Length: 77
Image 1 (cartoon, rainbow, N blue to C red):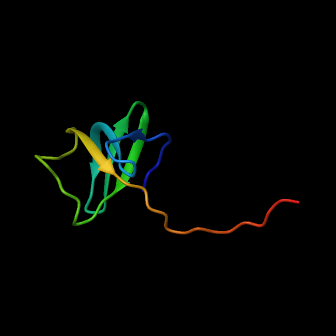
Image 2 (cartoon, rainbow, N blue to C red; image 1 turned 135 degrees about the horizontal axis):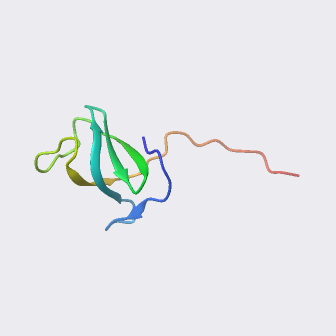
């Protein structure tokens, strides 16, 4: 889950990154502070953690955006 605006571009066209101190971390989510915003990124057992990551650690998170649903909308007349 991503909860803010304007992602920074990373190396790949489909990969983005955000850097900041870790605010919270669970088995399914990691939250970091970017400027004055809280960014929440979903994670799972396949998410690789390089180094000791804990609350307060400055990290760079690489992530991708994947559609979960696409709805067709009627054209406006």
